Amino acid sequence: MYDTGYPCRKGMRLPSTANKYDDLRNRLSNLGSALVAYSGGVDSTLLAFTAHAVLGDRCLAVLAISDVHPSAEIDEARATAQNLGLRLHEAESYELTDPRFQSNPPDRCYYCKAELFSLMCTIATSRGITWVLDGTNASDSSEHRPGRKAAAEFGVVSPLLEVGLHKDEIRELSALLGLPTWDKPSGACLATRIPYGTPITDAELERIANAEAAARALGLRQVRVRAHGEVARIEVDVSEMERAFALRDQLSGAVKDAGFSFVAQDLEGYHSRSDDGER
Image (tube, rainbow, N blue to C red; front, side, top):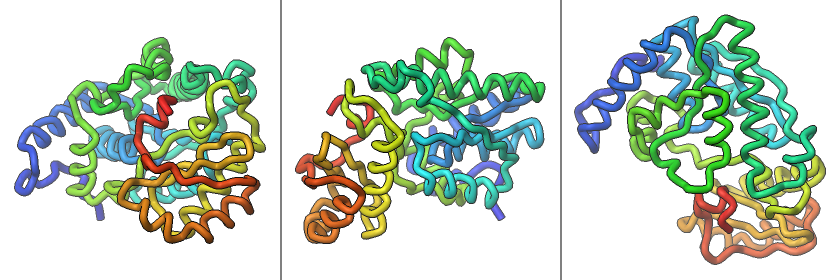
């Protein structure tokens, strides 16, 4: 049983977090009806859970099924929605049919999000839902956010951002509410593993997904496999770097089995900015 009301204010690290959550609930209540672009990640899960608690059947969580997202993540998102009792709809998205996205320019996220939000708006309109929401939060402050342009063009609302909730606060709230995603590692579309200018293909996405799945099977949690031709550059969280090196024989073999010829470990470790195309 999950708590659908306010989290316990006692024990909160920051008193303002509870106030922001109050603001979030009020903001969602005032929307009347909402479709949440749901991925099963930390942010969209908190948003979908809270919107469902406030709006009930007037809230629909929509999970996009696409080759740019690993099948394991889709399965996990589906299971999380079921466990939380969310009203879930699944829909196919087709980013790879857009040659602009396939060519992998620096604004590739714009084309990806434009496809996603177009799909979400179509579903919302067909079901008489007024608003489309996404999980952008106040920590998403990178200057390179082409997806935000797409969100603005499609009129997508970002309630977590509006009420000023940062990532650490979202995790704190998720833990207090008992959500299983509270400590889930950050995720990003598989296309972020491919350097700009290198074409995005089904085969490359599958190779990367298989390599990352193999790394996680060894017990590593925060993993990125950056593809540089035949070289796989492995990023893990700084806290896991020594463990990854200790597992280097198994890790190298598993990633090579996924289709790479050479495997290297990035000595700087994983940083979220890497998913924005800065590295």
